[in-house]
Length: 621
Image 1: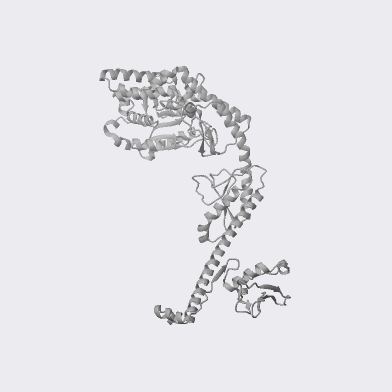
Image 2: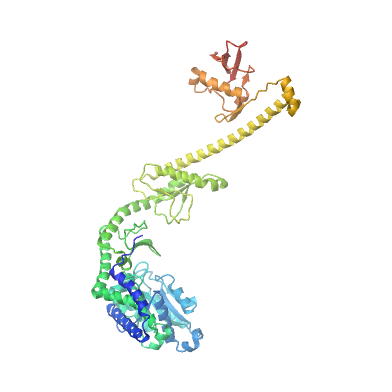
């Protein structure tokens, strides 16, 4: 994240907080005079700077607090007995506060909570749907709503309008809305970033109409890059007693010191410095409009990852336009130090990304159809937060196995796709996405063959799934082989026990009996062959090794022949015509290849030193 550009004017604001702590310990009379001077000077400068004549100022930390105090002022003014009767007066005529649908989210609810009013006292006015901007309040509909509330015995109290909506920066029709407020004796409150342009020499008529409002909230700290500076609400009202009752003025000198950091910053910047910062922000907007218009990208807005070097750019959600990229230099340029070259980099980045994003959007439907073509092995996952081509997911397994193996298969699939030699980005998707165990495919160019891409994903998914099945089968074979070996070893131990007899098992008697009559016990080992999936005895294993070493020639070249059976059924029909094969020192067996039989392959094992030859017949199934 970029550090805020705290320049000298920022240090002046921070110095103001330290000075406020020192000044607060002065004697009461000096403190009163000093704070009164600071408050009056700051109020005068702000009213002159933003063309708000004969106004008063309220300095507050929360930028919503000024509007809360203004609402209390209007309630005290419209309900004469409110100071003595309290909320009981409101029951006779319920007050109504009107706000725009494109206003700050949660602002109306905050007002009702702070004022103790029910949510039914809040009326949200829709924006234009047919004529005018879709982000401006519908004036005709507002007039209709006010008339309906008056007929219902309610009291229209206050209207909140925008000079720069939080989402898109649109300005309501302030002049017409002021006329409506005058007609129904309502209070008009204006807020928004476009109020900063009132300090410029040339101001549009739409923004100039804000100077006729009853109150407005300013945030000079954001506009001028001043850290820890309060927001300011300018208002006009002739009764100081009601302002005091509403909390807009304070008799405590220490509370007035909130204006000191802003007072010092305004002194340091001067009128020219303030205007220059606001003019620089507006120039950045014009520069971006010029560059985007030349690149024909102003009408095409997508969501894409924002690099840290792009100052003042973020992603917002608008009701009609959807996800948009917003550039608001009035809120960020002074703090982040945004310059002309940053705007050029942003325009260049847009020019690079927009063709890729357009081709991705065009190929999304093809990708969805190709994925459905591979159903049920692949499934298309819908994720609106992903700007890429799409998110396929391997399927085709039962529910129990799906929960256990889906993550493993898709993780392996993602690794294989990332190893491919391609410019396409494969990932696990958004950091806080709702979909899991998917392979998210990023943005693609128009020359990408979507059909081939989906075929590759499906083929890799099948290979991974088949490998998993092979491993499971091998695991099952090994498990069965171990059980079979355990059974055979148990039978061998029982046979040994029967051959030796019970007397040889007794500790003392067995030792004496073995001394007089030794017993030669042969331990028969077992070999588990993974290829065959069966358990072999020592004799079978030895014969298999001998045959593999000695047998070459015609049979190995026949494609239909197998040197050793791989199934247990084939192994069971092996005929052994000898009780043993002597393979040891001094006994070198030789194998003679017999003529092929009609239904068997005959191998003759002959040892010249043995008393009798031994024939081993291996039947071919």
